[in-house]
Amino acid sequence: MTTDQKKQELEKIAREIKAFKGLDIAKNATHAVPGEGDPDAAIMFIGESPGYNEDMQGRPFVGQAGMLLEKTLLEVLGLKRGDVYITNIVKFRPPDNRDPFDNEIAACADWLDRQIKIISPKIIVTLGRFSMTKFIPGVTISQIHGVARYYQPSTMNYQLIIFPMYHPAAALRGTTMMNAFKADFVKLKNLLAPQAKIEDNTPSQASLF
Ligand code: URA
Image (cartoon, rainbow, N blue to C red; front, side, top):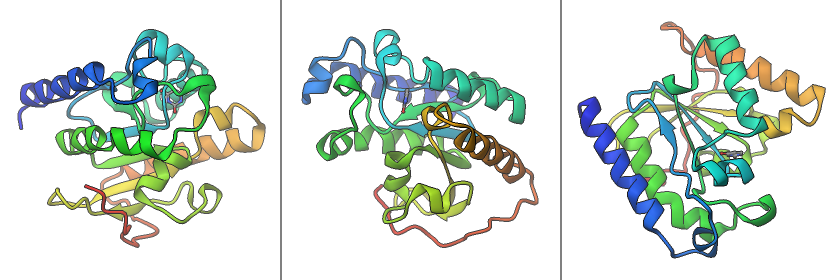
């Protein structure tokens, strides 16, 4: 697919998301938050769900957690947010920033799977446990953050790399998490080197798309 075709396909998905009224969180949203970034990005960040600021602006990760993500991205990888693709598991803000429900994750899954297929990133960075669980179920984030593994989507003809990280909002809550978040970014940088080795090559069973 050319970059223009990718853009058109991503815009089509964004239109579907904005028109969707099949969940209460969709009906109550100020703005849906489909995702944004480079359609040819090598790295795709997948968070949990939009918060207050994201709902107000219709853009992912524009609050405090987003500022940390953006700053670390630039400091460690030398990348701007427009160089990567950023989206969420759930495309509408749950009230009071509660955890997303299973039916909300399920209702948004097809859009996310299509976004992944169109962008075809080399690496998916999962931010937080909801995003991690889509690809790597049955583990805790404290066990596996910062460890890359291969993942074979059923509709794609190559393996992606899944790189689980703590959510930046968790990093903002304390020094230990902040240090882990930054250390994982350095590992992510090493992963981008052409000769990078994947530490854990267990293929994930969570082939949802
Ligand atoms: N937290 C998320 O998981 N996603 C956002 O877009 C903002 C905050």
